[in-house]
Length: 603
Image (tube, rainbow, N blue to C red; front, side, top):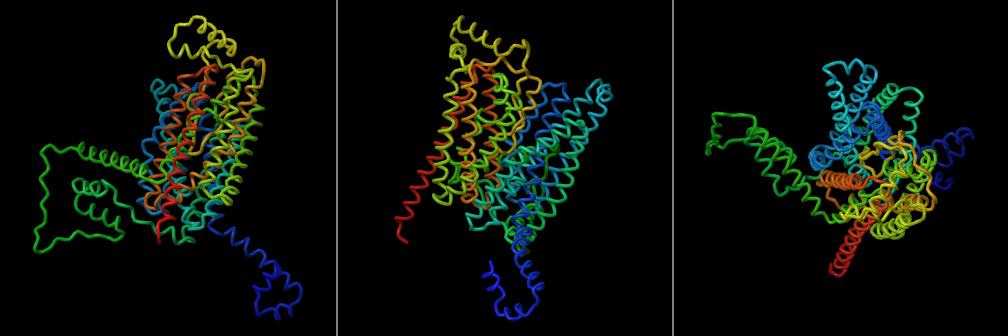
């Protein structure tokens, strides 16, 4: 450090030696603090702070909205299930449209609009919830209870809008801005991706804990107020930081021209019949980056539009807009399919079809096996530590073996650890019953059916309907925790042996090392290989694929909801995971063949 300071001072050493010691100490401290201050004021740190604030707010909100919906509907999971369906369906339908909007608009406008819509939607939803919780009895008396139903709808719509805006903001910052900030430095890109994921793992523990303590010791109204205040402060800070980053990195203001897809010009020309000549010219002007003014040559006569039909209505215009939206979605999915990393992204999406994560399905099964909530909380913390180890493993493997080989090693580690979950299905203490196969296949076996019914009564001593959650909140990241959904479910009888449940959670926890390393690998592959002009729409379709496979996972639970059938869900989940990693192996084979061809091709 002293040698660097001497080199930095250069020819002014004699002047420095002539200064008194106090002055020299002050100068040395300034020079030592210089790199730290420049880093704290640099774009990378500002992006970290913005992501941390956004992730913390998302985690608090995702935890709280599930609790609020259960409280609103009298400790019933109907609203939570509806909310889960609406969220998953909306991202599945609008994912490509969101990505197309991200690609077409300037980066700062997309970030600011997404940030404002997300925080304002959460703020408005909190206000509605505070009113409903405060005046619930009075609201139920208005319009014969229909006002309450209307409030439920408003809450779900606002929460869904906030989730869509959060998806857009995540794609914008974590999939686009980070790539531009790091430039061609792939090591720095890997470091930023790993750091953001580490923050997400840590925040996923403490954010729900913070808002949960407020709701427990105060009330739901105070909890809504706490989230409302957080969102207002976070909105202001994130807006300032992102604006500063945009000014500090000039490359963010330069956006590659969007490639003309199969139906792009046709979609733009359709605007001519809907909005007139001037709007289409302005649209084309936005596309090529310069304003285009419609002009008519003296030699050519202006084109006279066809007279509209006598009975003009807004229906054709609406149909044309819907047609353009469908065509945009179609082009987005085709663009996703054309990517060189298509198989890697599809393989990552297949990992969402699993019950082997710390969501409320697995925790509910643990409750039926006699595992207490406090022990589950400890297991969650250990799981988060395992995920953090995965992020460090990713950076080490990528530095020594490269990105593609890192994915192969992570895949093998992930699958090998999940084999413990397969062993747990047949281990002592497992409620898995082979008689369910005869029931599912329609075989009339009275003995098997009777045995299955007895096992159900053994594990569920409380006869009646079990409020087993089907669709919890699942954000753009993998497996969140909503164990509060099982607060009213009584744990079952203690099993004869805990070997099965120990193997299950050992496999789930250890597998997260390979899981998060693989997730970071595919994330960086998408960042490096997707063209800048298609980065938004491809990542939007990737989010849609993730939610689609997530829905398949919940459909599996709906079809096999009993604890005796959980072993079957584990086996199916393993098959989906293996299929996903197999797709990645096919991608690596294709990548290696192209790499060899490029090496053999003479320059």
